[in-house]
View 1: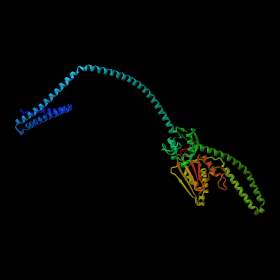
View 2: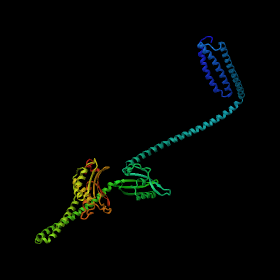
View 3: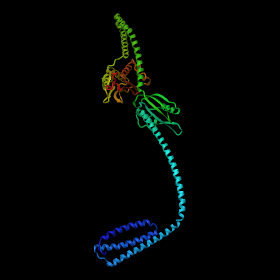
Amino acid sequence: MLTNDTDYLSAYRRRRIADQYRFRAADRLLTDTAWRVQLRVLRIQCDEAEARLAHLVSHKVQGLPLADSTEAALRASRIAMDNMRDVHTRIMDQLRARRETFLSTERNKVVETPVMLTIYSALAIAATVLLFWRLARALRNTERTKETLQINLAQLDKEVEHRTSVQGMLQKVLDTSPNGIMAFRSVKDPHGRLVDFEFLAANPQANAIAQRSDLVGKRLMAELPEHFTASLFDAFAHVVGSGIAFRKDLHYTAKGADLWFSTHAVPFEDGFMVTFADITDQKHAQEVNTEADRIALTGQITRTVAHEVRNPLTNIHLAVEQLHDEVDDRDELVQPFFQIIDRNLKRIGTLINEMLESSKKRELSLVPCKVGDIMHTAMKHVADRLALNGIEGEVGVAADLPEVRVDPDLIDLAVTNIAINAVEAMEPGKGQLRMEAYRVKDDVVIEIADNGKGIPPENLVRLFEPFYSGRPGGLGLGLTTTRSILNEHMIKLEVRSTVGKGTMFTLRFPKEVFVAGMPEAFS
């Protein structure tokens, strides 16, 4: 104020900031309420003194006149500062007195402290030694345990790695197995009776056979009742109850399929595991071989009988001609008898020729043919019969079917024979002959269906037997010849029939007869 030098103000302002920091620090240190009250009084006095000083400095710096005289303002400021110093001095005196009292008390305790300190130190040392001893022993035990755990972990890692490898190998075997494999858990009612089985696992081949991939966790009889009849369910229940394995060849015809499976069920935990091996080709080969042997034997007998009958028949025919010449003058009387004899001789000759034709060994002349051409040609051959009986004919061929390598004449004969049988089984004016070709997986399928009278089950099993005919006057060699021709072409023939609704013949051309997939030995 006297020098008008503003440089003094820098130190003044820094001190104000420092004072604020010190007040906050003192407030944190003085936890007693009485001390905080005195500190608050000191702060009020300090703030008042600083406010008066700030007022003076502000007006002095800005050159403004004061409300009071300068001397009065300075005097008021000094009074405020003196009051602040008095409060500060009183607080400091109290602090010094409190400290002296505390120090006096502590000096009196000095004599007692070494003894207690020695005792406490001895106890602390003993406790520390005991603690370190136990800690050292625990550390040694921990090290031994750690080494044991490391050894066990190494062994477990090897075992886990081995089991993982074995599991991966088993999973690969299951995934690549050509057989279907399923595992089941028994499902029982509250009385303990076995009522169903729950799927636990199924490999890809089993899913493909069942045409489902969402079976795990579901019930067997609820999801696939057509796959497992009551007798088969009872067999599986017997496996679970007795622990004895079950094996049987099953014929599966659901969803339009015609397959054979070798089924083998064994106990598995509280259920069973079953494997399905597709033996359709083996069954078909057995049927073909059995049928070929039967046809061969029948053919041998047929040729023998035909040759034995042909010679006497020729002699009878010559004798009748000679007799006809000798009784010429009574021709009108005997002519009806000669006509009967001639007609039956011709019929016998035709039957002998048919028997020889059916038993003749054929040489296949294989050429590429379109499946649609085979069907349309056969339909043309029965067109007259269809028109005569007022029967409708329909041909449907799927797009992009591969060509097949067959003997056109023989395949035409086989398909035409089936179509003729279909026409003869239908009622005139109401019949409908349908031929359809499409692709099923690796096979090309031709269906020949009619809505005729159908074939009873007892006659269906004899349908391809030589000399068996379901209509009067038939020799029973047409379908036998058809079956023989198809077998020679590796084409599987299946028949399904319902009495009163009709019959369906199914021809399955395997990929081996496709032009692109023909084996050299067969072609």
